[in-house]
Length: 202
Length: 257
Image (cartoon, rainbow over all chains, first blue to last red; front, side, top):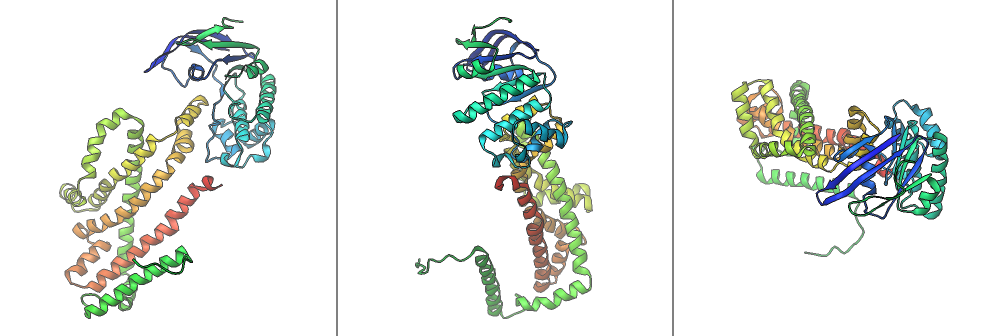
């Protein structure tokens, strides 16, 4: 369960977010849709606990997985090591199983620099889900992929979420992506941004 | 300037060997011109004194003493300098306080620190190693601080979200990013440290390469000064090629892959 109640968030340049309230139930997938630069990533960083400088309250479960806009892998560690370092309890067998689920077990011992962007994103997805997370946060995970790869990743992500059923919060600027993956879509708009449609608790 | 008519490039290794040979030829020429083995002996006339010093065990003993000092000062300066540089690079408030100290120590002549350490601590091993360490720490801090400022905030966010422990973060996230800077600090560190160690020994120790150079300097024995100096240069070059460069290549393995 993710509960968000942000009264205000501002940077030096001014207010970015105001009065954002919503919850994500276990097993639910909520998409946040809005144009570029509106503050979607800022909202996600607050939800994930990376940014703690805001007015309001956010509760999130202990086990949280996240997929960033960039793959954010450790380039000096192999794909399998990237999973094992973040999840010490996983072990090599667990890491291989997680990579198998995203279809790149054969790349386990390669460095991220030896993988294509699509493969790196698969490793990042495997890493986010490997810890059996109660909540999953996805920040534009299909950005800068070609349409075919993006479509494949979207299907894979949907299947993995359906199997693991974490409370999932998903940020995108694509309405099509939001409709395909999410059970509920929140539209972010205005300046400072707030929820302009789809808000409230389902 | 004259144009070289043949555009065929000479291999880098051959250039290096030829360049060293030219230096040797220069030495031979200068020695021939001097015509006095007390001023500058021919390179081949150093063989006999070198053999004698090794056979008597003096050269290995003094070399070992100097190497131990180099290792101690290197390990201390790298450990303290890396820790300080990391803290100063990550925390601007601390950096503002410590930066003026850094500037003072960077501009303090090595000789001043050495003399003060001997005066305050005494003519002993501790003073010698402290003096060398203090001379090198500011340089290490300056390099590591640059690296700490350039750490990727995205990877830090990733480590925070997945709740990596501080130890794992340091070892797998922070230090690999700092590795090129640590290597640069180690490179320039070892080069500066062994030179300062010789000065420290020259001024206040009764063993080591620096002491031997001092001894033979007082006897105006150019050949022995060269024997000790060159054998230590050879050892340090071996360290560079056999230890530092392989470690660096290993740390950079993921880049080439």
